[in-house]
Every structure is written in C-alpha cells, then in structure tokens.
Length: 95
Image (cartoon, rainbow, N blue to C red; front, top):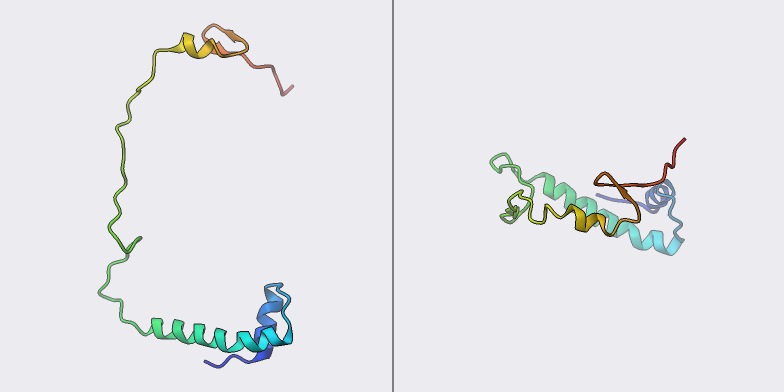
C-alpha cells in the first residue's frame, strides 16, 4: 500500500500531532509498511483457530473466600477517633 506525504500530514492533523515536512517524509514509508503488514495478516486463514484471550495458558490463582481475621471488632474500633454501638462514627458531611 502506498502512503503519500499528504496522507501522512492529514492523519497527523486528525490526530492533532504536529509534524515537520521531514518527519512526514520519514513516516510515509513506515506507515506503508505497517499497513502492508496488516493486509498480510488479514490474508491468514484463522477459521479453524478458536478465539483466545492469551497466547499462553493462563490460570487465575483464586483463594478461598474465608474470613481470616475476624472477630476483633473491639481492637479495630480502638483505633477509631470515635465509635458508638460497635461502629465507626464520622461527622455528617452532607446536609
């Protein structure tokens, strides 16, 4: 695919990226190579490949959902500036 300098400038303008004339000349063949590579990838037959989320096996490490440090309410509330009836007490912030 051929990308001319005007197209590079237009893309840069749409992306709100300021580029110089020299940068546009340098980027034109790079963008052409990238688009050519994308076209080449589009030609690959993937009809027999199952969709996947990762290229390597990935297993989540899950832990049991159990309470490991419970039953210490009095110790936790001992750090609170103010507590009432077994709960933290905070000042009212919304009228």
